[in-house]
Image (cartoon, rainbow, N blue to C red; front, top):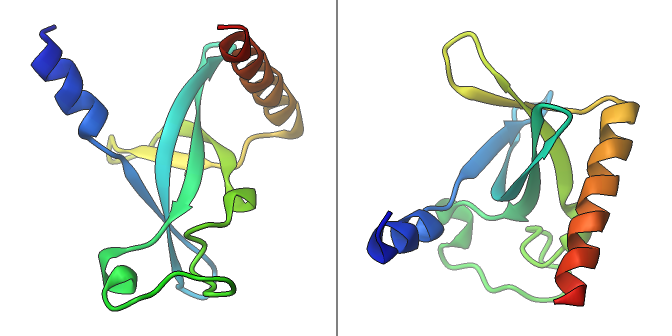
Length: 112
């Protein structure tokens, strides 16, 4: 893979749209994928849609989640019926394993 192809892959952001029970849409950027025990888990970080960003000034209490890192979470990636990836809540055991893998990754990066 050429450097140009690698750079293009790095620039491609995956945006995940989650809809709650009331039909409200929430936008998340897939920060990374962690493989754990043969399954993939995504770290999803809040972002805003283009519509929300238009004319929007970010600041304390804006409520858009743009600067609220506490809203990031892990989601299990599973293939949907239509072949597209779906993001679901991991079990408690899966969550613990993903957190341990993430902590080990962060610790390894801190050593470098």
